[in-house]
Image (cartoon, rainbow, N blue to C red; front, top):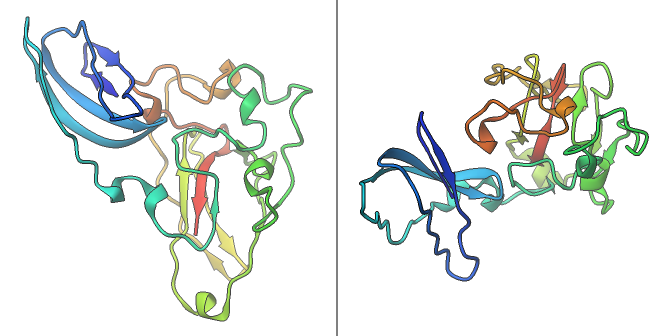
Length: 217
């Protein structure tokens, strides 16, 4: 849970058993309250805090459609959490540089159904390093005849990095608009989070490339 406005930020965990949360010591004012699934924002609303008083919101109903992880999928790589956790080398990227000798090779392709889809998918993709990653998958005749939507979650992007997809060398997606850029590096500072943004999900960066968080078809 997070409370934020232009002057301050406050954070507090929701209790796993029943979702109860309490954030104390908040200065009076109007804030955006954001509910996070790990670091994926799934709900927000405006809250006004008065001096010497307790603001009670009671139950917050979060629409299932706010979490892309609830959507049915033919196949999925990783979970939608707003982080690159689980992808190849993600465990190093909060404290190590991409060139660290402990990192596995940033190249290599992914086979859906292999059981290693998530761990084989690099947590960062750069234009000049490992762009052109191949994802191999099979569809039934009925699936192949139907229209599908490919969703790619991007945690952080830099230098206009954003994903573009080619399917069977016959279909190429449009190039999305560049995400809002942070004012400083994130990955090479030892984190996938940009250090100047107001909330974890506002950070988008991948130098010269793109960083999928979760891929669903």
